[in-house]
Amino acid sequence: MEIEIFTLADFAQDNNSKLTIVGTFDSIHAKEFPTQHPACSIACRLRFAAKEAGAYEFKLRLIDATGKETIEPITGNINIGAPPNGQLSTINIVINFGQLRFEKPGRYSFELYIDGEWKSGLPLFLNEIKS
Image (tube, rainbow, N blue to C red):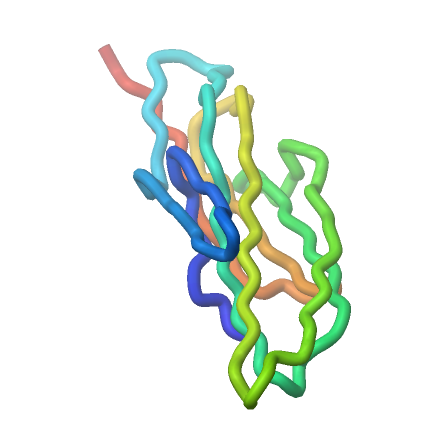
C-alpha cells in the first residue's frame, strides 16, 4: 500500500474515484482560544497492488501536542478488489469536518492508521494572533 495523498484542505470530494482537493493548509490563525474552524476536509488517496487485495480497517485520529485525542477517532472499512490485468487499485477517503474546536494554540496532528498500524501523520499548527 502506498499513500499517494494525505492532506488537510478547505474542501475535498470524491466523485466517482476522482479526488477534488481545494486549498490545502497546515496552519490556522485565531485571535482567541478556544476557537472553532468552520469547515475543512481530510483527503487521502491510497494505492494497492494486486497482491494487497482484501479488507482493511482505517482510523483517523486528531491529537494535540501531548498525544491527547481532541475528537473521537474516525474509523471505517475499505475493501480492495483485485484489479484487472495487473493494474493497481486506488481508493479515496474524504472526511469532512465542521466546527472543529481547538482549546489552545500549538501543534496538533492528524494520524492515519491502517489495520491498527500507524501509516502517516499530518501536522496542523494553531497560532494565536497577537494584537
